[in-house]
Length: 219
Image 1 (cartoon, rainbow, N blue to C red):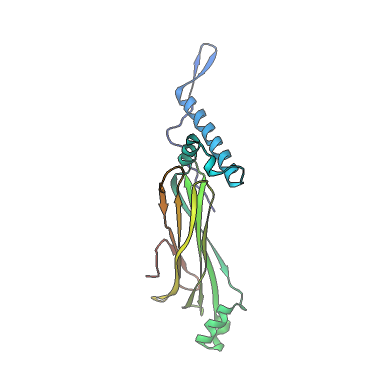
Image 2 (image 1 turned 180 degrees about the horizontal axis):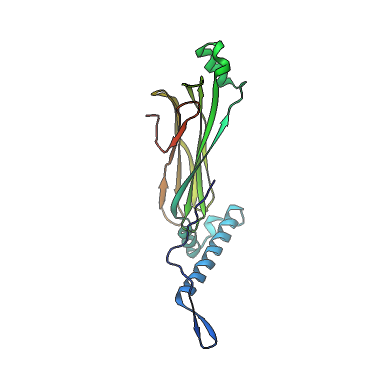
């Protein structure tokens, strides 16, 4: 997956030469402070993820630190396609509908569509994915299937609440499928401060064309 680099805004490094001394300006001090906070937050998160610390043991300052670097800034998407084996049940199912003589022309594929959320400091916070399947007879899509869907969290405070919706079917000559996952961020507050239910959809259009989007549902 290709990642765009995001920089912490408002941070700049500047040095001023005073006599024979190099004096750090406030901008440089701000950069140093931000770098230290990022290292502290990353180390703290690692300790929690590895079971060395419990969320309940965090101080108010530590909670604030994880919240600052756990806020979603951008999301990025990635895809991958796999050709299904000719012995797969989906090929046999499509042949049963179209006729056994068409089996040699049937091609089935799966498409995995992933979505990863990042903080402003380019930290991966959570990821969701959907894998959809579709079969063609060489030109026309003839079937659709829901293969898999799920998610994972990487940052303390974020929780994966699970798969809340999914589906697959033929619509307008396309083999469509989708998954919807639920996530929330809650740390030191009586309610979640971030909440999201992202959708990922795969649309098999032809043997050579497959599209992905973020629509919740087949239509």
